[in-house]
Structure formats: C-alpha cells, structure tokens
Image (cartoon, rainbow, N blue to C red):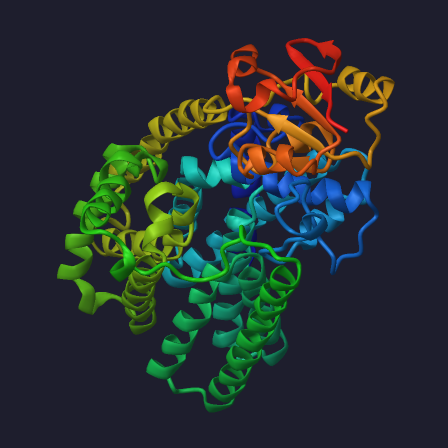
Amino acid sequence: MKQTFIGLFILLIAILVISLFYSYPSMFHLLPQGSHLWRQADCMAMTQNYQQFHLSFWNPATYNLQSLNGKVVGEFPVFYFIAAQFKNAAFILRLVHTIVFFTGILATYFIAFYFLQRRFLSIVCSLLLFTSPLLVFYGNNFLSDVPALSFAFIGWAIFLNAYKKENLFWLSIAFLCFAFAGLLKASQMINLAIVFFFLINLKTKKLIFRLSILWTIACGLIIFSWYFYAKQYNHQNYDHYYFLSVFPIWKVELQDIGLGIWRMVVSLSKNYFWRPTSILLILSCYYVFKHRKKLDAELRIVITTSFAIVSAYIILFYQKLIGHEYYYVPFFIFFLFAIIGILKTYNFFHAENVFTHTAIFLLLIPNLIFCKVFVAEKLTDNLYNGYLSSNEMQNFLLTNNVGKNNIILSLPDDSPNKTLSLIKRKGYTEFNNYRTVLRNKQADFLILGNENWKQKESLKTYLNDSIGFFNGYTLYKLR
C-alpha cells in the first residue's frame, strides 16, 4: 500500500509539472477557443444562461432562439450549473473539468497497478494517457466528454479494488461514478456493459455479482431517466438541434463510411498519440495476442470486452465520428486496458531490464513535446472575437438601448451561439433562417460584422437604420 501511494505522489507531481509545460494556467483564462468552437460555445452559452437569467437547474437554455426561449438540454448540466454560481464562469468551468481530468488520470494509476503490480509501469501507463492531445485539449475545455471519461476511470479504479476486497460500500460508490459518467455523456454507458460482461465471465463472488447486477440496472435506469427527461424537455420547447439519439453505420452512405475510416485511422489519428507511438502500440498488440494465455483472466476479459463494446459504439454513432474527433474519447476505455495488456506482456520478458525501462521512459519525452505543439495548434483552429466579448461592446450595446432582454440577429455566424454567447444576448444567427427572422420581425436589432454582407440583396432593405458602429460591427435597429 505504501508503494502504491508513493507512486501516486510521483504521478501527481509529474502531472502538475507537465500541465505547466502544456500551458494549462494560461488556458484557464480563455473563453471557448480552438477546435469545435461551435460546440464549446453551446456549453458556454448554457452556463451563462444559468448565470444571467437565474435559471433553475432543471430549466437550462442557450442564447439561440431556435427553441422556445432558447430552452434546450443535452448531457447532465451539473458542471455548467456549478460554474454559473461564480462570477468568472468560464474560468471555473475549465478549472472544474481540469480537476476531474487530473483525478481521472490519477485513477488510471490504480487501474494499471491492479493488473501490473509494478509502480514504474503503472506511472508510465498514466503518463502516456496524459500525452494524448485529444484528452489534454478537451480535458481543459468546456465539453463534458473528457470529464465523463475521467469519472469512468475513477469508477474502474474503485470497482476493481472493491471487487478484489469484496467491499460492498465502495462497490456502490464505483457504480455511482459509472452512472455520473453516463449522465455527463451517454456514450460512457459502455462502461456498465463492460462491467456486466466482466462479472458474467467471473461469477466467483456471488454476493458481489448479485449486487453489481442490481447496481448496473439501477445506473442504467438513472441514466435513461435523465435522457428521457432531456428529450421531453426539448420536445416541449420545440428544439430540433440537440442530438439525443444514435446514427448507425447502416444509415451512412458508402463513401462516408470510407471517409470515417480514413479520419479515425489516418487523418485525425494524431489526436490519439504521437503517431510513431500509436504505430508501436498497434504492433505491440500482436505480442499481447500471441502471449494472451499468460495474462490474467480478468485482464483478458476487459481487453476483449472493451474492444467489442467500443466497436459497437463506433457502429452506432458512426455519422458523428466522421466530423467530430471528440466522439473518439470513449475509445480510451479500450486504449487503457490495451496499454495495460502491452505493459503486462512486456513485463513477462523485461521485468528487470533497466535499459528497456529507460527507453520506455525516454519515449514519453517526444510524446510530451508533440502533445504540447498539437494542443497549441488545436487552440488556434478557431479564435473568438475579442471585441465582441469586451466590456466596451457591452457598453456600446447598452448605450444604444440594446438591453439584456432585447433580441439580436447576429451576422455572420454559422453556429447557434458563437457570437451570441460573446455579446450575451438572446437571438438568431445564420444557423437559423435569418431571412425569415427579418421578414417576420422576430429580432429587435441586427449586428453585422462583415462589410461585404451589406451588398446582399436579402439584407439591403433592413440596413437603413444604422444606429452605431464599434470596431467593425454595425448596429441596426429593426423594430
């Protein structure tokens, strides 16, 4: 036990130092920025609506009025609600998600140690996960995908040790973590399925088995209850935006199936790890398969089951995987167990080999450098407009009688909430049919941020009443 906590302390110090290397502290102060700014802005908009309009937890909303008063919901918005209770909601949301992510990485140490019983290899396993650009970028972010994965990791760390010691209390806590992971992101329900098959294949502890089956059913009911509520809430508010279903591979065109494979395996694969490392891991899987009989039965089961269930997840959500790399986050459940299997196989032959241990440790260095560079690149994919988010813009709007309850048409903006979340006003964008919005006089003001748009025939009629200009943005009164 003492060895375990020494390793945990070393890992914690390493994570904090590496997070400084990744420039995490400077990221805490950023508004939604970088890859998938569209989706990040939706999360921020929901957080700000909780704060700005003093909404109850059960009545989340965003700024875009494609639904009734902007009322929409997807994943369980508990962290958005918590962040909204603080003045600097963006900072708190990034901070909370990061703390959960760090805790998840620490949890992988316990998972690895459970199977490996080697402190060094367990630390290597956890640190390797902390070099994944996908996890590092979305771990300090507004999306709930990595926090959900982190709760799944925490659940596995507690479950395996509770299962080993037959501790019913901690077993219950583990299942609550799995349930919370599923609430944050429905895709993390795959962990309940993996646990179920794990128990089916190892029915040696009858009380644990029976209680676990009951908890699996209960957690499934909790998660389904939330998403049933979410679907009803969206239906009642005429939402047609939030995706709360599956889009399986058989509904995808053949050419898009090929595109999805290309992106997952080739063009977007550098989101997993530094590509040479990914290739090395794939090649190492051959040796795991070759020596699979040497692995513990428990490890064999979680590797094969997680692979099968993650494959099923890919089949069911294939369309989303084509264009959204953050949908790859659930792959890391399988990646974790596969890496543990690789390290376990390595340990059979090189348990005391100082030279290979050193080589493995040194391999982390290029991975860390690659991760830092690629995360910085992902941060610059898409930048928010600092003028729109400034206090001066708020003063400009208020000076021109654009109050907090006025409705804005913000152009150009192809997303529901990117610009609306910056100016903190309800309204419409290009995402909506802005011609219909103008024709039906659904907006009080138009804010136009592109001079070329003034030549559009669909807008010319409405550009007669310019009431202000601020750093490239022209304000028009519509009614």
